[in-house]
Image (tube, rainbow over all chains, first blue to last red; front, top):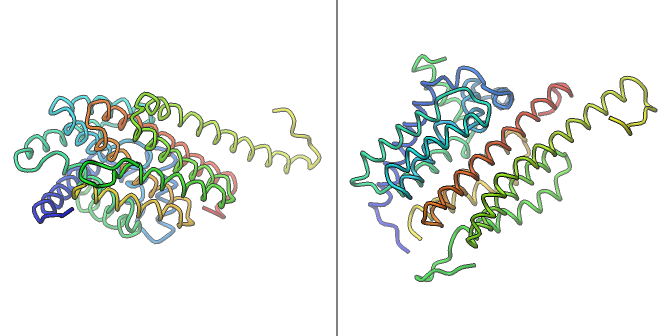
Length: 165
Length: 100
Length: 86
């Protein structure tokens, strides 16, 4: 087993693309502004008590509590890897059903899945779709798994910079 | 554990067995009921992964659809327990809790 | 086993250990969300057919639904028992 430099560069590029995609779309559709359900409010208040940012905590709670653009990006990568371009449209339908099932009246997941499908289709010439699956896992690890207080501060800073709070 | 053609170990059964063992130890060691339910969720993820790694796909789909229903029933039971404890403390300490 | 599988395996082991070792209940939910992403991706990479995608989507939506229910119950318990514990 050997890991070449080309694979690492492809993984880093796909990580950046996925991170930019879902953070920008979720911020634009107003996830850091208010908590959609009660569980997101609990997560935001707890992260604020630990020293983080309140709006970034709302963002992370909304990711946990309903399938938003992050889940949409992962589903688009999986279905593009298995079925091609029309798999992305099937993933859009599945994420729409999941959004309604989790009591969330928004369109962030649907729009995020569609834009991720278009981006993967445009970049599929020199980056294979399986690298986007690994890149999405790496991107969600930097937000939900590494250091929660710092991640909430970064997300709140981006939301304030775009003027969406 | 399935060994591939090139001598490498497949990764999904390894991760699933790890999740099941750590989840069992966590369910035994934690004492609060919400911690127990969270660790049970962790165990169920590993269980579905182990079912998928032996290619029983229909069983995996049915398990992953039915599993939130059981979690919701457990959580409703715990909320009912808290309500009963509060109402007993407010009215009388000798109130029996047999009915609803 | 190439770079993608190695990366997802290392991340899932690290996150699983952190779920077991953390004491805060809300942080456990966040790590559990990351683990659900990793297992869903591993399922889709293990079974290379369209049925694997259907299994991954069903597992992901079901686990998100139960995480939602657990977070909602934590909020209800906090609201009932006062602000003393998380």
